[in-house]
Image (tube, rainbow, N blue to C red):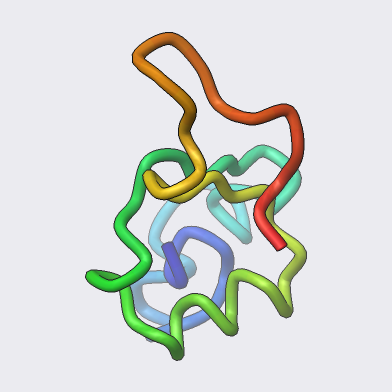
Length: 70
């Protein structure tokens, strides 16, 4: 994700036809495991203000809660 958002290695972040390759406002993180991604990644997600619904906030088989993850 870092390369797509314009961070990380410049050679990868500037690989495509535009920079950044993916604007942050077009990104939604859904169904990830907070333990698996680790605290550093979770802090970055929060700092960037990215909309994120970890698997721990999904209610039932058909949907997520109506609020974003804190």
